[in-house]
Length: 88
Image 1 (cartoon, rainbow, N blue to C red):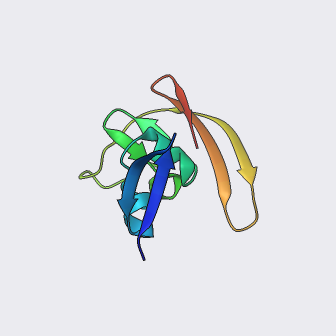
Image 2: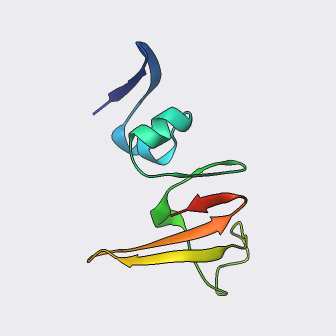
């Protein structure tokens, strides 16, 4: 399957559903297909964020402050303040 994301009548991105979700072409596409954290270097989906001291050294690391934790049944939403933004 191929999908097309349109923004104001123009094509913002064409690709497979997985490509569009995992590698959005811009902030509009990333926001359109789901909750996204925007950091220096690009968009990061919440399910790709690891927390804790045991994060492998080959992954990008950062520091933040946990501002809220919400139990959602099958998942837990954690809001972290980092780089002047709230990440989920």
